[in-house]
Image (tube, rainbow, N blue to C red; front, side, top):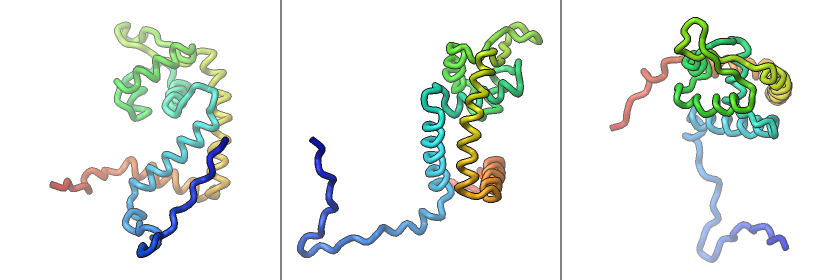
Length: 170
């Protein structure tokens, strides 16, 4: 048997009902809105990619390897903007699933070269279609011009040297 939905607590005698909290300063915090946007995108991505076994980092890895067959793990890590140790597990998963091939680099046999397998290329076609649907949904929700503007602003923001503007609180 389902429990009834929780009812809002009513004010007891002498208690005032609360008005919405003041979030004016929070509304101006870039990190707050970026976190909310990231959570929304993770949720939408998860719904679109459900059952594929590929998360956002895995998808990024596959995209980079499609465009750059034979790249080395360090190059891949830089391209997807993660530290190389953080790339090991996601890469292992893709290799184990047969989507990525790891082989000795012909330029330096001590190094590894990464590329998509034929199965990885086929899977990526389906993943790209799912991602295109996600992006189209964003374009419809925001309008094409605002979506492109948002992407441009995010690129600019992430490439800016914002660390110089930050002062530590001590």
